[in-house]
Amino acid sequence: MTMTNPRIILFTGKGGTGKTTIAAATALRAAQLGHKTLVMSTDPAHSLADALDHELGPEPARVAENLHGQELDVYYSLRKYWQNMRQLMLTIFKWRGMDRALAEEMAIFPGMEETAGFLWLEKFYREGNFDLIVIDSAPTGETLKHLTLPEVSQWWLTRALPVQRLAGSSLGKAVSRVTSIPIDKALQEVETFYTRLLKIQRVLADQNVSSIRLVLNPERMVIQEALRAYTYLQLYGYPVDGVMVNRILPAEGGSGIFAEYVAAQQKYLEEIEDTFKPLPIFRVPHQGQEVFGLDRLRAIGEQLYGGSDPRQIFYQNKPYHFIERDNGYLLSVHLPFLQNGEVAVRQNGDELIIEAKNRRRNLFLPKFLGYYTVTNSQMMDGRLLVRFEKTAAR
Image (cartoon, rainbow, N blue to C red; front, side, top):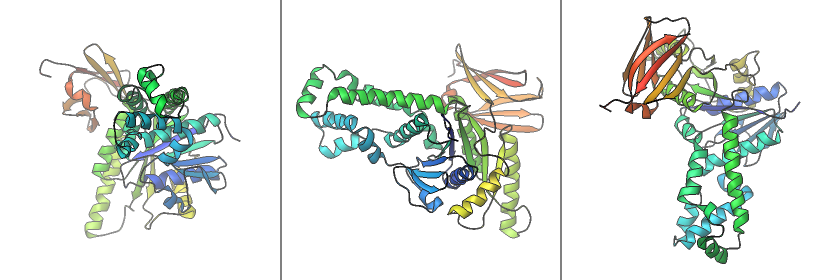
């Protein structure tokens, strides 16, 4: 039965980790369990249609029972929903002397394609026609930028292009004489644009509705990028409820270079389990073949979730939490069952190295903390508290 408020699951990971495959397999598994599901690609390099082996377009298309798919198109979205706003921006740019080609390009402001994805998401969430919305997002670095788009978009439209000050101004009157677009209507679109972006940002940060799942392979560089993403997502308040480890080779067999690669994977698997604890870890064995089509995706969904429903929330907590303090920040890290004297902390550039007994965790810090220095750390009620302060040297 369709819910009033759909569940939202966003998949992100380093390019090439199989993010689209995992997202599609999750959506198909949920659909099999009776949840009306939409899987949406917001990655500009769309490959969702290839994974599903089904033609997709800018509107949701039926793929199988309970399953719909969509690959976003920014130009289609603009034409359908925000044509007045775009035409207003285009007219202003041209009125200010830009040639037509540059004005056309500038009217698609930075991040508009990803912003369109959030606006579609807000629409589907508000309408409540799906039980689950699965998002195949852009690679990790781009996803982190996209999650701050409401602020970026607001700056662009109020500072770089202050359209809200047009009404009644001399510029507004001049623009009115050279365009048939009603300025009041276009400004209303801008206001709606803001409101919807801010609303869906709050929804994505609501751990009772939304979850982000990190997709990675057991490889050093991929793990490091996932750790950075995890830290940033925690900093911005976005809930992560699982880590999906893809393309795991069998632990036994092989020889020569292949055996060395398998041994390295096993070492990295142990590192993933330890580093991302207490997040649940989901494992997918290497399929030994290219993965596309519903049959192969169905097998991956079963391997991933077993008897579990992929729609459920697998973890709720904030292992890393930054608190603003006078002259700095306090970082709180969930480290249960440890006491003072069992944990050592040191800072190395943008990394915080935490040594607990015989274990070491490298936490990648937000870049702005490079201007701060660790001045104190202590354990309290199962959490490590690390104090960052600005110093004269910085």
